[in-house]
Image 1 (cartoon, rainbow, N blue to C red):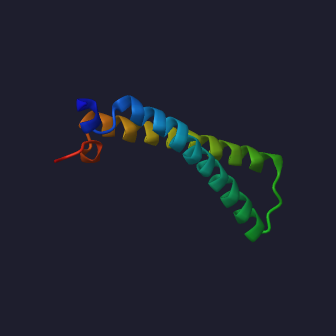
Image 2: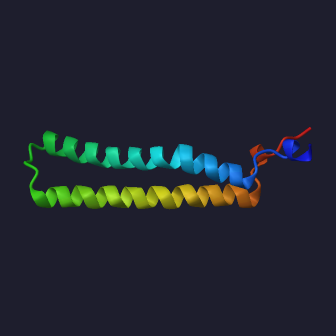
Image 3: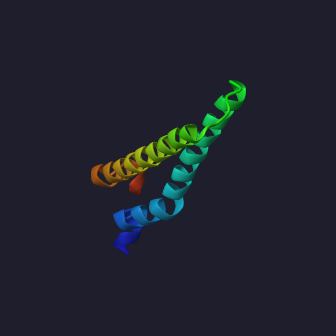
Length: 90
């Protein structure tokens, strides 16, 4: 069948990336922000007050937003441009 020869279809790419990639990217960003903040507080011997947690939460939210925007922009450009790895060449 001709569809087997054209590579990944846009719907397949979107589904695979949303289910497999985006949750891991977002979770990794949030964990990274929290780990960096707590490590910085431990190294600097700073007691974390409630306003520090609010700052960490804001940084984690910014990490989530930037991760989602970057992921969708990359996915859109990959589908729109027709990245060479999406096609089987013979």
